[in-house]
Image 1 (tube, protein in one colour):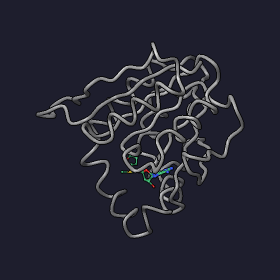
Image 2: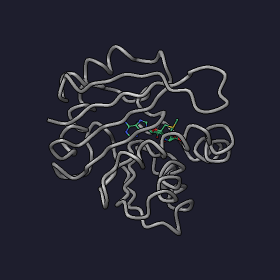
Image 3: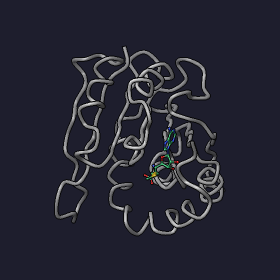
Image 4: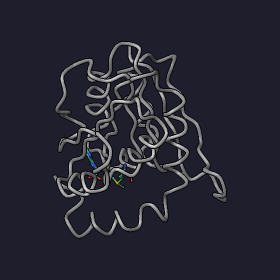
Length: 184
Ligand SMILES: C[S@@+](CC[C@H](N)C(=O)[O-])C[C@H]1O[C@@H](n2cnc3c(N)ncnc32)[C@H](O)[C@@H]1O
């Protein structure tokens, strides 16, 4: 199922930087600090690629990949990332188009609340991560928190699963949450 059609994707692309720039900046700073040199990083549900652009501007050494269910979003990401070597694919988080052990770090922003099956998504995120790799999922607080926690405990090292409230600078309240976990 494609959640974002052509018109909706274009509208999101136009609004995203203005409304979500603070979040992208925070996530890119955190992921940029966590990723090892030359790490392979996947952004799941990348949308128009705004986070990947911010990551590229901070860490030119990273091997960046983005995947999204919507081909329209992937077209927009390709247009937004023409100057950055980033590999983009259309695909579902529940059936990721990558071999096992492909990435050192998987990140996702504001996409998890749309994933149809969080347990299957967790299985796929764990499968494409190398042993010891990290997942960092940012999303709106309050949406599907319990199911996300269960899925991460199921597929990742349970003792490493963390859930923290996230408040980008100048945001009046902590509207977002960050889940992190390490792959076994
Ligand atoms: C609200 S947008 C967020 C886009 C981007 N990550 C950002 O922060 O601007 C949600 C994105 O998740 C994608 N998405 C929804 N379900 C998905 C799935 N099952 N697999 C991969 N991507 C999905 C949508 O197509 C959309 O691009």
